[in-house]
Image 1 (cartoon, rainbow, N blue to C red):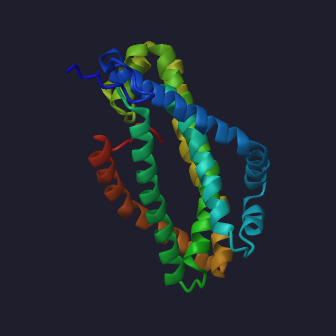
Image 2 (image 1 turned 45 degrees about the vertical axis):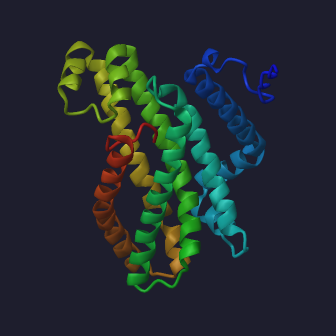
Length: 270
């Protein structure tokens, strides 16, 4: 009696050996990117005006966004999600070959959630220590809004810095992708400066601009957190100093977490 050959399940290729893992990963990557871009474009009409208002008048806009509605935190987290998605899309082409984009994105989301909760807890803790009466969820929502413009600025300026290095030395730029880290203070930078002092100086300027923008932004926006906790300017300033000091205590733990996950203190995506 002859047995009828088993039919392949619908949707599966007849010969799986013809489909390599790389092709499967690339296919999943393209589908994921397509869906991600569709979601970003869907929310852009509402997101861009809100981001513009947030940058122009951060304290007033955050106060309006967190005026007491029950969906304050939900809106804040959606806003953060769109911001991070835009940042990931901008950085996707910079990933080194062999990196699985989906795995990196999943790990980055988990890492950012931990960092996000850690720093918001630090801010909440020092505010309450100095007599603040705000709720943690409200603090979390305010912090979520304030971190978004800073994150986009960091991504754009980092990409500009990488572009400067790439325009000088493709191999050095590729090495920075595989071994992410600061170029300043290394023998590579010294060689960069010797061959192209102008470009090297611009690279330093971009790096310093990134630091100045981030520090200035949070300095200008700290009042939004002060209002949530009802602190005086003096106590708010003291809270800012304590939060800055506490952040330096938390940062090494996050650095070791990044090393454990990604193999480097600097993750492959910002």
